[in-house]
Length: 360
Ligand code: TXA
Ligand code: MG
Image 1 (cartoon, rainbow, N blue to C red):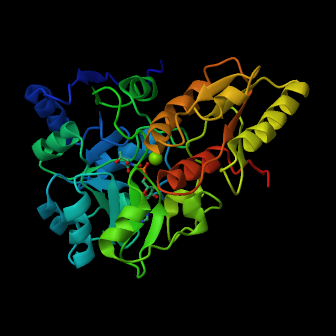
Image 2 (cartoon, protein in one colour):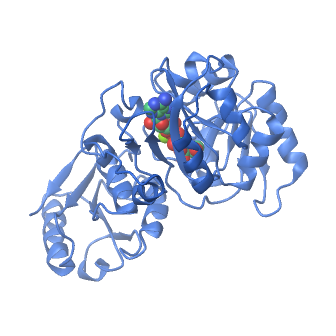
């Protein structure tokens, strides 16, 4: 465990009955300009008072995050939107009514109250109201919106459990709130509604199809949101960095069509076998439907293809595990880009550093 000098207070808070003394203690740290790692329903966040630029700057330092990558501001009530923006458009309220609190982040025009660091100099700010009871209480008692990226060192898989954040952030922050595992295990969906049609900047825990139904509009899905290329700086600043990655190399084996899984897994099997023949020690990230085809290979089970919620939830945990095992390369199966499948493919492609094999 790395200890970079700071004494970090660990508060174990049960999400089903949050201990108010602990919330008040953590909120005081936020008010005083300190850093608090806290759980959300997606992944853990590394939070600071969003209206205090000195506090926000510490986030970038601790994460080793480039200053041109803006942060999401977390709110606990809708009125806070008015501090963050002077012209909140109707669509935002419609989305908020349907999906907040929850794993949706919207990009809105920012007000002059937002420090430069939060929006990295852009004219916009990313906002969401998280659904985790501890996150909501922390924001409420801090009496200020909280800016928070995922609480991982830049480039690494986001933390989805108290164990992950303790390993990553011990000695670097003032408080770590440990509330166990997060619900979705993958970040919020980000859409930019300042554009027409709206653009998906990052697929996440909320399937984009559900947002389309609510606003009754098709949302543009650029190539970078599929994890196929990097975004230009102006549209989605953070998307240009390598993300979510284990230290060991990862290859994703994709198909156009996953309807014949027996045939698909035979081809995956051959690729992994070839790696073994070349002297590698690979691990294969497979699924409940295919794992039975991989006799003699070392495998992880991501979950069932019929329950992509489960696959998304296991993904970061398993990406982190790769680094702990006696293997030197990982190979993952691909998924159809529908619903959470789009989110999973975005993360896998980026985690692989675009190391993709197409087998059709
Ligand atoms: O689920 C989540 O969204 C988690 C939890 C902690 O809320 N947060 C999270 O934050 O994933 P982060 O910083 O790891 O990812 C936020 C992404 C970055 O890629 C950033 O570039 C983008 O949001 N972003 C932030 N503000 C933006 C803006 N004004 N315009 C475009 N993209 C923005
Ligand atoms: Mg992140």
